[in-house]
Length: 129
Image (cartoon, rainbow, N blue to C red; front, side, top):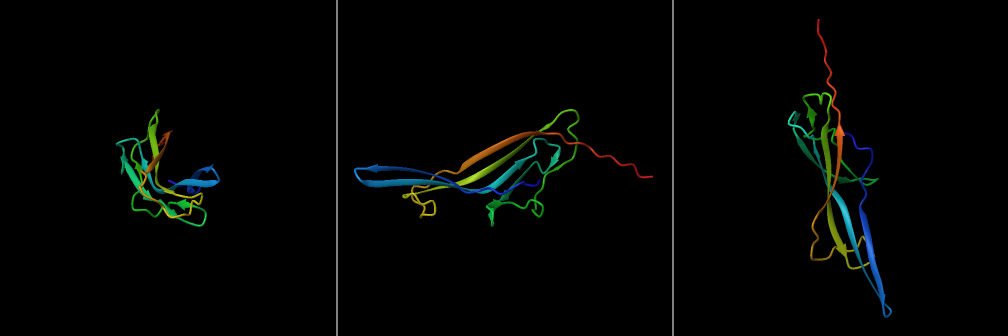
């Protein structure tokens, strides 16, 4: 599996000016893990989870050198397999408009984004003579 790009940390800020007092809170989500599911028992392994690491352009994963890589053992024939990729996000909040501010308590639950795609797996056959 090859990713076409990096994942970015995301944040949003809510603020209010109440009687001249500015108040704000910022919610920050950073991607921490990528889980892929082959969608068939004919894959080995059927799932892999990769840690996402912060790089120059954002958060990324190198599945090429990972100890876990999904290999399909059988073609999907005339059908498809329901491939699924999920990103786990570590979600924190700050008591300011600064997303780089110190995380506050109570902690927020992790977030999860899921993408599903039907994939066709073709079989390659060779004859040795």
